Each structure stands twice: as C-alpha cells, then as structure tokens.
Image (cartoon, rainbow, N blue to C red; front, side):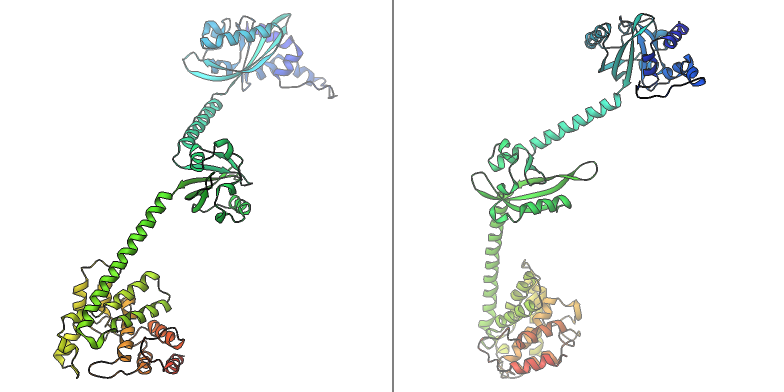
Length: 508
C-alpha cells in the first residue's frame, strides 16, 4: 500500500509536489534544472523525505474522511501508528469532539467542490485521551483522476494556552480595574484620558464616556494647573514620583484634595505609552488631620498656660528675679532661631526657659531674697534647684525633654558645671543654649545681693569663655544677635552694642 502511495506522489500532480517541497511557481524565474538536478527533483525519495520530516502533520484522506497516508508528525499528534491510521476515518478513530464533527464535514464538502479550506481550529483527541489544539488547512488534489485531500495540521496548543492565559489575566485586570476602591485614570501623551474606571467617574461626577478624551487639566483645580502639557511630557520621559497630593475639581466645580500614585505604562520595548494615576479622595483624612492639628494646638496652648502658671508661682516667691525666666526664655529662643534649629527644638528651648528655675520653689524665701552673699550651705541649697526642677517635671509628658533640659542648664561645656558634671555634646543642645541665655540675663539684671553688671560685661563673659564654659556655636549665635541688633531685653538699656560688636570681632 505504501509503495502505491509513494508512486502516486512521485507521478501525480506537479503543483502538489512543488507545494509539498515548499517551492512556489514563479513565471519570472528562468532557471530550468537539468541533468542530475532534474532527476533529483523527480525522485520519489526526495518527496518522501520532505513529506515525512515536515514540521507539521501532513496527511491524505479521501472525501469520506478516510486516511490514505500520514507522516511522522501525524502519528505523533494523533498518537496512532501509521498502520492504525490508514484505512480508518476520523469519525471511527474519534479524533474530534462531537460538536466539531459538523464543521469537519462541511470542510469535506468544500473539498469535494474542489475548494481549499482553512486554516480552521479544531480540538484533536489523541489515542491516549489527551487533547491538542490544531490549525488545519486542506487542499483538494487530483492523483490519477481521483480526488484526494491533502491536510496540513499545525499544533497550536502552546499558542492557544498562552492566549487563554493572557485573556484570563486581562479579565482579572479588567475586574480589578473596574472594582477598585480607588479611581484609576490612564493619560495619553497629550494629557487626555484614554481609559478610566467607574470609581473615577463617580469621584468626579462625570459619565465614563464624557471622561474619555477629556483633558487632564479639566479635572484639576485652577491653582494646580501649571503648564500641564509639559508636565505630562516630562512624566512620560522619566519615572514619575510615586506619591503626590493634588486638588481635583468635580464636574459641578467642587474642589477636593486627592492623593495620587503615579506610574508609567510601557510597551515591550520600554517605550512609554500611558501615565497611570491611581487617585484616592482624601477629604475625610484632611478634615481629620486639621481637627487633630487644632486639638494639638489647643493642648499646646493649655500646656503653655500651665507652664506659665508654674513660672508665676516661683516668681511670686522671689520678686527680685521676677521676669528672669521669661526674659531668659526669650533670649534662648532667639539664639536657637539664629542657629537655625528646627521649629520644634526652638519651642522646646523656650518652654524649658520659662520654667527652668521651677526647682527654686523648694528654697526658703529668705535665702532667695537674701541681700548678702550666700554661705556654703545656702549655696548648696540653691544649686540643688536643677535637680528639684527635674524631679518636679519628669513625670509630665511634654513633647520635648523639658525635665532633662532643666536638669542640665547649669552644666558647662568643659565639665565644670553641676549637678552631673556633663561636658561637650553630652549636654543637650537645648540645655547648652539655655545655659548661655541664663548667664547673660542674670549678669545683665539686678540681684538681691548685687546690682546688675550690665550687658557689656555679660557679653564679655560669653565671649571670654566661648569654647570653655559655653558651647562655641551657641556663644557665637548669642553674640551675633546682639551685635546685629536682632534682640534686646525689655526694660534694659542696650547702650552696649559697640561692646558686643567688639566681642564678636575678637573671635576673628
């Protein structure tokens, strides 16, 4: 039987042989094979090899669907050896599902009318029960006056599965896109909306069809619109920042705050296609934040009132030093500002300054107001006010380390201070600032046991002991604000501006 088929293939239709060999007739091709080449082309063995080793399944069947011949790929695809294929129809072998048999029959009808078909997709069932997707093309051919059908079946299972996987992923993405709790916008290179989800339409009060093609600038507040087109181009050319806060505008003109997560969608070659914006309405969050800020401000104001009350308690027991704490706090705040400390540090320095002598509440009033020099015992009681202040304040939950600042404000840069003998940067920067402000204000003011030394003498003290008793950076800032007229004590004559300038100049 096989030799007969081979003979038919060798002597049959020339167009068929050329198609199997992969050769197209070209009337412009003047090349004519001769001699050994012609003999080789007419060789039955050549066509047999081409047929057998073709990458697709090649087969011949009659118009009833009965297989006459099949190549190796046909055997592999169906799972049937050649001797089981030949002489049996695809119906008898059960190669196709029942619902695809009418489609296969219609193709045979077209072949009977001398018409080719395909490519058409079928599910092919193998002998072992497996399934494969195939793409079949058929060509009616005449061999010795008999019409046969040449079939070419290509296995497209991998392609089909990949397509199905892609379709599933697209479906999942579409579901996530449409059901997302956040609004999603895709912008093209012109800054127009190419795609939006339902949440985006609900957020802005537009129907989806109105949003498509709408320029991005039409949904942002006028205050946010600054050369939007150039911004879109810039975002497409570079990776955008991941998170932004903006103000959007609804269709009715209402403005509201949003948080935007930006990303760029690119093609397989890395070229930017769209800017994706995932947008969240943060109106409620902003309202809550504002309420929290207001509450925090009220608490801070209440805290300041409490601190002022504590400071007043001390000053009522010691009228000679009334105002010392507040003036020291003012100066400490000015020094901290000059040193460019953070706003939070500056406020912490000020609050600590207002109550830095709170520990004096434990000292007998007669010692505080004694008009003469203190003896050693009295001096030790006064020096203990830093520790007492710390004990009073340490249980209060201040936003700043107030208790520690009060505890350390008599420490000195070279370690000669009290009560802990700290030095250098072991002393909090707030305490170093407060220490300088405390000394300068005390020297510039009257005391029960002595008249004021005056501001020039106080500035000279800071300059002389810069880097010894006092942090050099703090001392420089203190001298600078007086030299440049940035600070003055109330009710204290500042006739010593020249002396302060000279002190600064002496620093080199």
